[in-house]
Length: 441
Image (tube, rainbow, N blue to C red):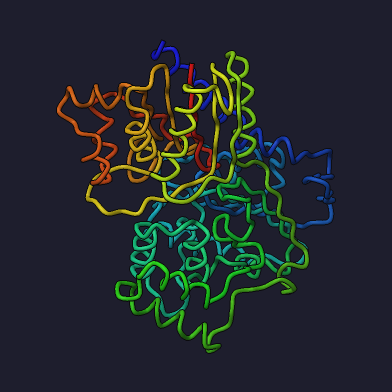
């Protein structure tokens, strides 16, 4: 039974992935009929534009680029997209530049500067398509004036380890950037700008996805200072970053572009896929497999271990009373939790979720929990996530592995690896946060 439940959990996960394939997602929202390009509910007469450029960044942007090339073909004058190492695809006209993620590197800086250089050649008779997906923040690492790439690298590392959520992290990324937080739109102006977006942010906040390079920024320098104070980072943050934020908060530096800025006068931003679409497809697949299915939420955030305990408690309640849904049951949730790093182990938020959940469901019959990132990457590992059942903790103990010890050291990868319970998909070329699946039979 457990083998079948594990197979079903992975099948449900992969159904969610298929639904947010970037090529299909772009195709659902963008079409071309001769010289008429329809994007969502807006239409563009391509004959009125002298040139068409494509730029972008993110883990899914190469696949989005392929979809755009299929639609526009030879109408594309030139293009450049920054993608994570290993996430490239063969394209015809658009050039791909591979770079580091989640910590930015020199390759990302070079590619981002090349994007800005390309946009400097555009004018009011040109059309620019920008393709953005999760990972775009790290892949567009142009430092604000006075900062170095090393400053941004250290800032990013500290924020990722602090337990800050993606909105808080991106607030600092925007204000420490020369391209994010609406500044790419300013570089495109006065060209027309269409941005196609694959959302990896809870609530699909446009100014948080890839740190909002083409939309008005709703955050401020003061918000950034509040984040640093909230997580106790003032004593460790690079002095250049602290100085930048201090000057910005005091009015010595201009804020990022806000609503009403001329840069946004001729722009369209369209989300082509997100976490909820993946969850809907996962639910359909679970129902096909015979499960009573409950979609909890696509907006789960907070500390990973807390979320894991809640999901495990629901599994126990289903087993005990048949509530909130009777077996065979499938609970689904999405979103993106955070891990406050206290140990020196190796893992990611999805693996940590499953490890914490495995302790909470220990001994529970016919129960399986899977959590994985839709991008195929969980933290600095080659795994998308992991899967566990009610006997995982006991099996590990037989191998001399104590689950609680590994959890305390944030060492979920090395816990699941010898058990064969890591979920390894390789790069999926999409990215809409995480999917969590609880099956109780």
